[in-house]
Length: 243
Image 1 (tube, rainbow, N blue to C red):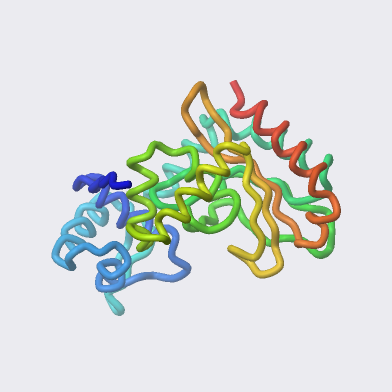
Image 2 (image 1 turned 90 degrees about the horizontal axis):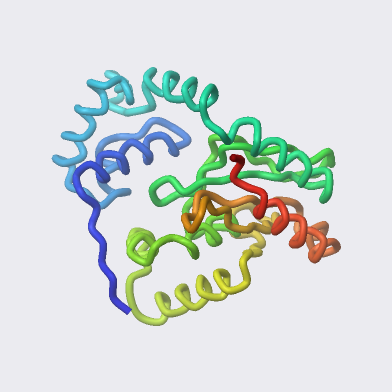
């Protein structure tokens, strides 16, 4: 199966921005070039634009880049006007009460899945996951259930981005994603954090995928209540997104 998709210049600039946003520390232009596969000259061109709009900041001493103050304006607008704020938290709270485990809502952002809301588990031993945290779209139940329901071109672009572009590896991935799409949910263990299992189901607005609702918990607790958790996650996904 071949289906190539190339990012346009605007998408490439957003890719640079999201790499900076998802990094655990300030990053250099050289590292961004390696991560994105773009020439360093192109990376610098995008960095200049993003810096001029205060979306990123440059550390003059170390020539590293981090997210800039304009992000505060984006966050404020999201918190004030996003329909996710109240409706999603209500559904996640009910899901957490039904399962006793951490419930989260994630959305696709570029080649990653971003957590926009979560309700913690009351257990002392629990999964540590935060709002604003992201993970690659090929890693974990939340990511895979999102990837499985994205348009074919975007699926192929994502797999190619992570070095999955041909041969048996590609065929294996496409079969796994097809099974997830057929089942309507995904389960994973130790793909993102060791000993942590995830159960996730896609959320649609009409026919368009908008995110995924998930439970994340220690593997043994998920195994003990697997069917109950799957049913609760599927039920939560059906009532999202909020009107």
